[in-house]
Length: 572
Image (cartoon, rainbow, N blue to C red):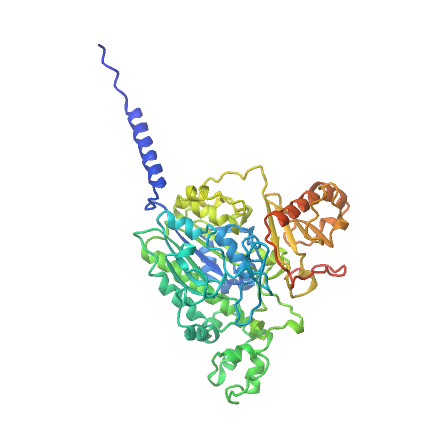
């Protein structure tokens, strides 16, 4: 018999490559994450789009580490979070759900004398804010998915999605290690309560330092990790160190006068910025220096020093990755939970504790914290993964939303199968290929619809007071804002929905008008725009409100009236 022809070198190479691909697939299938990147996620608290130097020349010296990181990262200019306030935004990051769907239409602040009710679904909610007692631990989270495939998962810092003693412990949410505040200290490992209170009011940067110390226990070259770092700056209250105030402006705030007579931060001083607190010696609070501390220049310098404190934390964590030799193999995301505190608050709602925080910038966007205009939800975001993207600066204008991080992190960790085995129509995120591949795929032609809700006090001037709901069809650049009663006109088709069905309706083209200066319903094309774009989106919103939005009492829901024909003042 004739001998079979020998297979050439090309065949052998193809065979070897195929075998390698098969082995790689098998490793992914069984959860061997030794070759997958570690993930570090840093989430600032109330950092505005205009608070970082890469977006605002006037603040360039405030964020040197952030700006340096931008020179070797993707800068996402169209990154939005799912809520303009803390707790709802954080719930969305973790679960990939819209905030209200996850049970958090408002913040989950704790108090000894809260009133509660049970909604129609059986969930226990706070009467004042309609939020659930704690995040449902059965919801699939980033930590659940990554721990399942072999990652060491750790949460450090602000939690803020539940703080009752009955709340499940960290392991129920997928965390191997947790050191948290805004959580109950019995089920959740934390720091000494007295220390936390002291750091919060007297030296907030100490909280950053202890997180960096804890991070050294997590960052390890031998095992992949998912580390979520959650500082509480530049959220109020603020108590920056002198050296951080020295690093920023404005120079018209005289630091020698500010820190005269042995000044130090205390809870009483932070809460009573406008007059000497009772019981403080006169030499400690002379008329001259306490008046100087409340000048606009010093208030601004306190805030900017707190942003600088966040930047120091970023620098320390970058140095940790470099020291451990894993910077190139770590997917790093740095962003914020929502926009900055409003700069204009009605006197009756003025909070002395927040006075120092009321100089954040959302430039060039309209709105602030608590507003569904872009300034409340579009935030700074840097993504670095040198092994994939190298170390060159690149600006990315793709539509990326915070709910995308769960499926995106799961994709790079090899946890797709874990999510696929636990389907949930409430999870709306999609894999953001642009963050994790050198050649990203184009988004699907099926443009997903995403919904935002903020139904409570908005604070600030009327020109940043947005309607209650926002709807966007992704990748189109179009954003519809609505406020209406009754809540869900589902009995009508989109062709029957008319503008007078709603108390407010606004439409913006964010691609051409990211500052939301021009309401398209005030143009000649308003009728066509309503019929072709707004009415179908309004019906989508109504359907979402009745099928996915949990029922709440809404005793503190507020109508957000528009300005009386007042133009938005640019430069906020």
